[in-house]
Image 1 (tube, helix red, strand yellow):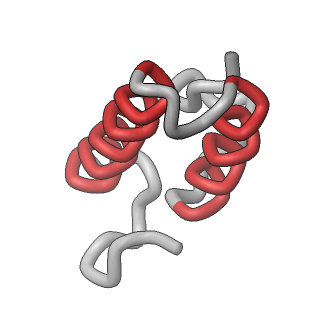
Image 2 (cartoon, one colour):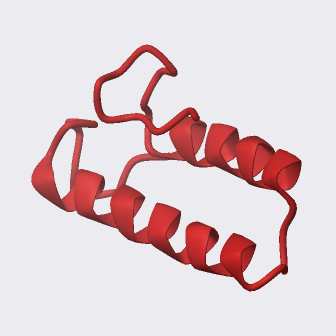
Length: 62
């Protein structure tokens, strides 16, 4: 789901929200809240939420 005010998945605001979400996810993994497998699953959900395919240069898939 893209931000309501953004129709472009590559809009700066959309990408900043995506990257902030990834940073929070990474912090939670480092603190032991999530396993690496759960993080991969969560990143796939974030990719879908922000409209990025796994092939996008902006998507973090590793």
